[in-house]
Image (cartoon, rainbow, N blue to C red; front, top):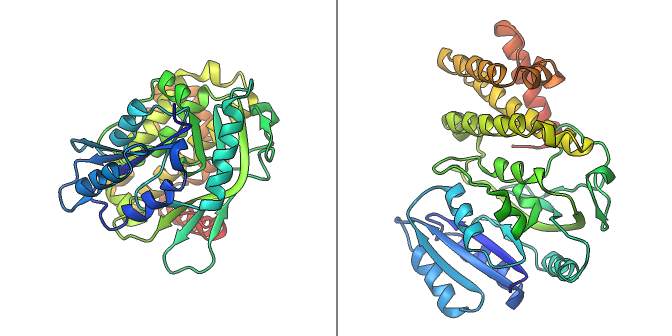
Length: 342
């Protein structure tokens, strides 16, 4: 059995996937790299995947499938993974070699331990086009550093400080047993990927190394704000799925105070992003979508709705009138500058 399975979703990724794969190959025989070609057709993505499988048959595996979107490619990676642990790396990102070695060393240690490691967390770095100073996202203020811990060992989670796909490595069996199935042809499903499995995560370890390099800069990137507004229906879909999951598993989630706080904060941030983007769009159609989103949440689970609606972010994103919407957008832009999020 391999120590770590890495799923690499690729869609017309010819221009950057080699850099990503080459950085992952440095893990050697401990790693299997699942290059998931998600129906690429505009370039040589498929042949590059086959090339790496041919050259590194004991490490790389090319998986060709019909186009289903990022979530579908991740689903395929989870299904095909044989490693003890599982990681997703997007094809335009890469990992740092020195940190990679420490990650594998840590996973090896837990592979033979009585302590069950459900999730390893590392730092990630924004590799933002045109910026010399790279912003590092770490968790030192919230998580115990380089020791095994559970939810109740965590400190208070701040608003907006959550664990992204870039940060996590899961125990593969936990993912498979969770039954997670990301929706196809939908952007922003990475939020579901780091939300639903938290229900079953118990044992964790935070390795304070700058492992994942998250590239920001392509104009067509899904996190580009203009692109996000154009795909707002998909953001709303993900928002509703997360809300439904929290509502349906609320009794189990609230058993662990810190887990409950963390998952609620994450849901609150996603709902805030949806609301602000719809407010920024500003037209009647999108303002109606915002109204409908909140109405949906109220009907689904009134108590959870009230907690979101009457919290600080809920109030800030639902200020009345044109002036209130202007304050909402200005506050969002200020927060972006302070926290440097997308």
